[in-house]
Image (cartoon, rainbow over all chains, first blue to last red):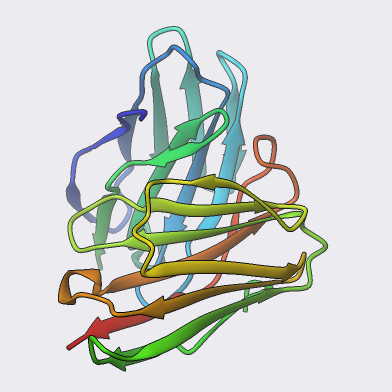
Amino acid sequence: ILNVEQSPQSLHVQEGDSTNFTCSFPSSNFYALHWYRWETAKSPEALFVMTLNGDEKKKGRISATLNTKEGYSYLYIKGSQPEDSATYLCAAGGNQFYFGTGTSLTVIP
Amino acid sequence: ETGVTQTPRHLVMGMTNKKSLKCEQHLGHNAMYWYKQSAKKPLELMFVYNFKEQTENNSVPSRFSPECPNSSHLFLHLHTLQPEDSALYLCASSQDREDYGYTFGSGTRLTVV
């Protein structure tokens, strides 16, 4: 079992603020890391799939970095908007993926 | 809609009932998964099917029985469940297990009374 941890557990930011959160995982037996965005009453939606150390991916105002040697990934949101409010999940693994408990983001208008 | 459809969306069942959850995808994905989400816990992988063959079974109690008749359909048969089995059950599919993200359904909210 891979212990995937996310922090913080929840976050409240003002509209327009930039924010970031962390996903930590054991660096051994690592193959890939996924980030998902999960809005209430909807399906988790894949944001990024990352495999290479030093990888950096971007989708609009959201970006992510990956450090496989030290076992962490950061997710950044620039200029948060109310529609960014969701739970952000990461999953890490190889043959099997293990999820963290997520970071719940609330963007206050 | 994400392309992965789960039915029903909500289910209430007694401990002696038998029911089935259904998942369907027409994305051409070759792997399908059942996940369980209990309150305050991470998503837990239950079963994996790759090209209709079960490849993972994470010590799930036998009261949960998966079935994958073809690469587009996945079922989870439930019988003699316990109240602690109440949870959100999510189905997902992927093209390849490692290199692509998963496409999730909206889940079935199961309550065992």
